[in-house]
Structure formats: structure tokens, C-alpha cells
Image (cartoon, helix red, strand yellow):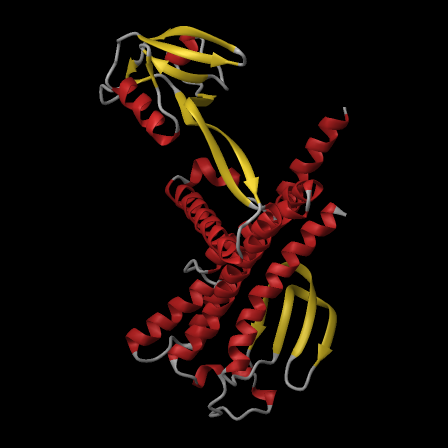
Length: 364
């Protein structure tokens, strides 16, 4: 059931995206002749008054098609309600509506998540947590015997305050003390003892010990006091998820060779979603919100076959005063679609192979 739940979430997100395009077009009276979920041969079709609705074999996305370039559509070429005959602003609204729909849907998924799970708070305690020891050559932390999960209560008998203030104080002391031994008062489990740590000079001469730092505290949840508090907490989560996604794309683009293996296809996404669905419905809501934000950001990229690519065509049309020739647009879009489908199939094969290997390894 967890796999089916994850697949259902992905399907719903695709439907929401295409409904954004479809709804924006129909609300403006623009003709739409096809609403399709997936690509390739149709598994199911229904012909409405004007629009054909279809579910297709390859669920790697979907599309909303317009009768602009179909001579047998029966609609005059000068019809003002054809997509191509509408002002650029109207077309921008239609093309952007899928991205906007995914972002709005992600926010409401997070509203549901907060309403179910409550408001997250952190009860802070004295000191600074070391959640991770970095595996670095000449690591001062490893040499001193620090361990993940240690809590630094004081340095040179000076207590560290809770929250971010303690983290900043510890960072400052370490940076200002290259080759100088600092006496850490460390809490490990129920024991408290002193550990001498000598920061090593970094590239800029500042001291470093090779650890990650975090506030010392425990996460607790409480029921929301009002619906407005739910909305505010969901907005904060939405901002955090969006920033996390943008940072991920930024790292991928700036260092593609090292980060390309982090690209995930539908199989890997479903596998992650299935694991989250095993926990509870609330985790699935978070998964859906994060994937919906990712889907929105991917689609707004200025690449052929994506919404961002079509917006780029409209920008060129606004600059030139006329659209690019249809043959050029079609050639670029078809090439982009082929590359996108090729990437999708590659990721499916890679992730399926990896998943099968992991399952075989675990079985042994």
C-alpha cells in the first residue's frame, strides 16, 4: 500500500500541474483540445464537448494541448480564442499556471501536515551539540577523541549559552585559537568530563576542528492555538522547503559532475515516498509538498519542453515583436522533449537497477 500511496501522490501532483494550465486557459475562454496525463499511447480516453481527456502509458508528466496548429480542428485561424491569438500576458498566465498550482498545492499540503502534527518547537538546553564529526585529514576533533552526539557545555570553564548564541560563541573561540589548546567540558550520555582540543589552522589561518555544530535541544510538538497559527507555521515550512530545493539546484548546477548522481528519477522518488508512507500519512504530506515544490521549480527552468522554455519563447516574441517561426519552435520543443524522455528513462533504469541491487544485498 505504501508504494501505491507514493505513486498516487506523484500522479496527483502531475494532475494538479496540468489542471493549473487547463483551468487558466478555460477561465480565459481559450480553446483546449487535449488534457493528457503521461505520454505515449493512450490507455484511457474520454472525448468531451471540446476537449479530449487521456491517461497515457508513460507517466513522466503530462500536457495540455491547444488546437492552434491543427488544420482539421474546425476552428478558424483568426479565432480570437486560439492560444496563439491571445495577448502575451494571457499566454504567460496559462503557461505559468501549472507552476503556480503546484506551489499553492504544496502550501496546502503543509497546512494539512501542521494541522495534524501540531506546531514544532525546540526546548533548548545549555551547550552546543556536535551532530557530526567530519572525516578530514588532520582532524582535531578525531585526534582529541570527540564523538558524534557530544554536547560541549563549556570552553576553558566558561559556560556556553543555549540556542544560536552558544554555537556562535564556540565557532568564534575555535576560529580565534589556531594551534592553541582549548579545554572542552563535554557531556556524553550521563558523563561529564574535560577534553583538550587544539584547532588546526585552515586555509585563511583561522582555527578549525572538523565538526558540525547544532543547538542543544529536543524537538517537541504542541497543538496549534488557532487556524492562523497553522497557516503561519505552514508558510514558514513552505519557505524552508523552497530554499532547500533552490539550494539543491544551485549546487547541482555549479558542480554538476560531482552532484549528478544525486538526480533521482520516478523509481527512486516512489521508493522514498513508500518508505515515508510506512511511517504515517503525515510524512506522506511532507513528501508530497517537497516533490510539488521540486516539480514547480524544475518546470520553470528555461529548458525546451518545460514551461520555462515556453516562457522564454514568449520573452523573445515580446522583444522581437513577433514569434519565432513555428518550425524553429517545434524543432526545439521536440528535441527538448526527446532529451527529457531520454533522461527520464535513464533515471528509471538506473534507479530500478540500484533498487534491485539494494534489495538483493539486504536479502543476503
